[in-house]
Amino acid sequence: MISIGVDDTDSQEGLCTTYLAAVMMERLREIGEIVGFPKLVRLNPSVEFKTRGNAAIAFSLDTDLPEKAKEIALATLLELSDFTGPKTNPGLVVAEEVPPELSGFYRRALHEILEVTEAVEVIEGLGLWSRSFKNRQGLVGALAAIGAYFPDETYELLAYREEKRWGTPRAIDEESVWRADELTYPRTWDTVDHHHKKVVFAPHSNDPVLFGIRGEDPGTLREALEEIRAEPFERMVIYRTNQGTDAHISRGDIAGVVEERSYRLRGVVSEGPVAIEGGHIFFSLKAEDEDASIRCAAFEPTKNFRDLVRSLSPGDLVEVYGAVKKGTVNLEKMEVVSLAEMAVEEAPPCPSCRRRMKSAGRGQGYRCRRCKTLAGEKVKIPLRREIEEGFYEVPPSARRHLSKPLVRMKGRKVHPSR
Image (cartoon, rainbow, N blue to C red):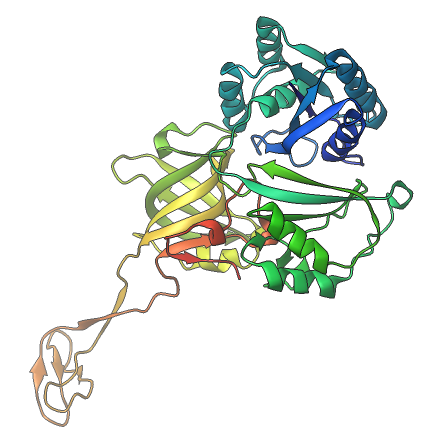
């Protein structure tokens, strides 16, 4: 049994690491058996030098010909990597065993920005076989993917286009996609965006992916696939993945945040939401037990989620989820833990006729013109808030791969985006 990891073979212009792995697995079946589902492993989404979604692939192969397997894997990588891409730096790793050290490396790659030298040190220390190109950055993802373990896991079915259609508009019957979503939601998610009335499970780039269906189990994905009408696809693979699990989120405190990591932070809204040019919304969050504070942002692509953020007020206790970049939390979701009481002051009602009293003059309190009743002070009338306690999320069109959709958060008070 050997484990094969591969990463960083695609580019902004085309090709796809998951497609390369799909072809690689097909070729390797001639000399062995793919054991279980291949892993689609999302790593730190804040990595600036990623090509698109920062995904790496790993799978297990039961074979009596490990050297031949390495030869086939390398030939496939050389054939289906876009070496012209400025951010394309392919890496391929093969391990005959998966030592515990690799699980730790995966956890670090999920939360930190790792250097190639760190991956090389691990590879050489464990005596693993590897090949890498250009600046060799793909070794980090390939190694992390082999070591990846999923305390929580989901699945994604990826259908790939026929090569002759690459770069052309995708032919997908959108009505059938809505039917598939209606049939399988919430066991599947992020297939369509109800608020914006659009299909979101198909990319718009030139890569080989036709569409991807995300869900709780392989059977549900196949059920959805049966409903979808689209152009013929060359191949289809179901991946086991950490997508939709919040695996990238660490509980942290505001004073201790580190740039380019993703956190769950609890605090009190200290400065209410403010809109800036471009439609972005910002507010400040202060730690409950210290002076530290941080700015939080709902950027324009989060669309209707911004209306919820606008409803926050100073004094609200919230937990925010998202990556810290340039000292700002880029919001993926938030939990409103408790709402500050808001009220307006008004003249008191007359205790006899219940009509609103009128001012009796400066410093003289209030008088009912009908009953002549007197009262000294205004009364506070509670205001109804436009937001409730519970979880809120960005819409599917703005959701990160790793971010857990609220339909997966059982036993919590949630307000899903649909």
